[in-house]
Length: 174
Ligand SMILES: [Zn+2]
Image (cartoon, rainbow, N blue to C red; front, side):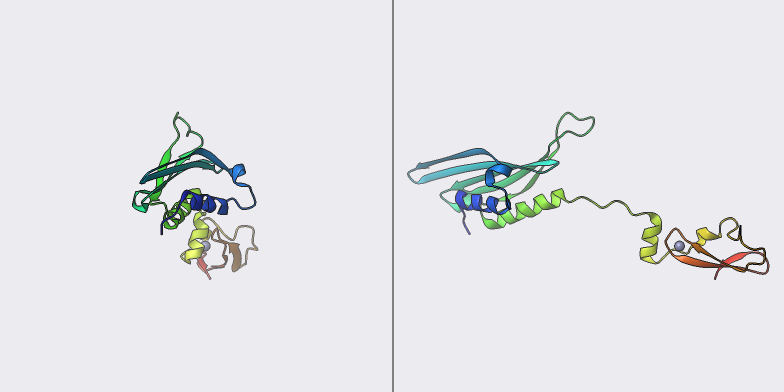
């Protein structure tokens, strides 16, 4: 469905939450001209997050087929050793709600931060594949009574594991 610059301003207002439009959205260009049979209006804004800047460009034309909505993301500061900031084209298309939703989703995806790598032990525990064999390294009965047959240890995977001393002196997981 075709949309106008006025609609676009409304969509921007939706993401402002309790802030006023002017507090969080920088208007870079707001121009329009009407000519017989030829109408064009442009509205260009920048929005910012902690790390990135999103330049969004809306062009309304007489025919929706010629309208445009697009977004370019760029880092607000250069990476170490670089004197330019990296950028990426986000989705673009006709000026309509569908394109706006795509851009909005892309911005959120761009901002999501990957989780820290989990420690190997935790991953193994989650997969249920830890064999707790690391507990058998060295003498697990060190510090136990000389005649102790069983000892409990906490494996790196988080499991509490019982170890059993065999008659021949070797240790196995009970
Ligand atoms: Zn384990």
